Length: 315
Image (tube, rainbow, N blue to C red; front, side, top):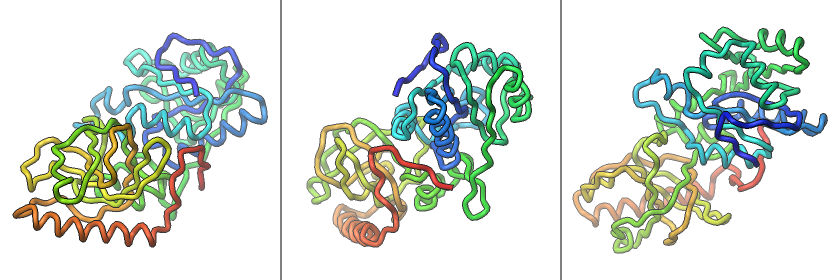
């Protein structure tokens, strides 16, 4: 997959394009992507996901302390695995946000050579969000672009949205999050050296320091799976500061074998909240109970393992 992270580019091949923030790349996003992939195959077009950086919510500071579900690298990883040809991370600024609908459509034609445009039926764009699906269809008919509106994806009559999923993550409901994302909610990053205290308790861990802008589930213990160099390992992860030992930095500690390589940790189910124990012995006792609960969950889990390859959307 080609990744473009500048406004200075020109795509010569005709394209099928979908537009959005794609934070989380949930089932609704995957429906958009699958549609451009289908058109690209039929009409021999290049498939393009047109996204933005930074997230508009972050740029306009509409929400205090706003955090994205996926980092740029995590979003790249998922979109590439969907089979997309080109990902554009267009610089989001006031100039771009103030484009009129006609100017926005011209950008798609001049820079991306757009022939097919796929958006959600509720999509709004341009200055003061004045453009919508009807505006796009009207402009598209004049400029030779086929515009397709995709209905909202619903699960049990409830719309799948980034806002809803973000709220579920904040409440630690990772099982529902996994269903709506069609994959586990995960974090990618370099493994860092910890204090190696886990080794002395027979619970060696790999440690990751997530980016400050990454939305994490509540502090606590989770059943997780870890991918390292294409191999998957079951385990349990703790998110938090390790209060029993007066820790300060919030990090992800996952109990598997010791590795010094990049890893990806997917969170499937919250087991309990993080808490401070009276001593290491009490902590070890609880960790053993946590490990058994994780193993029991893994054995009875209804979830399909998330493979490091293209996956198809549902709904």
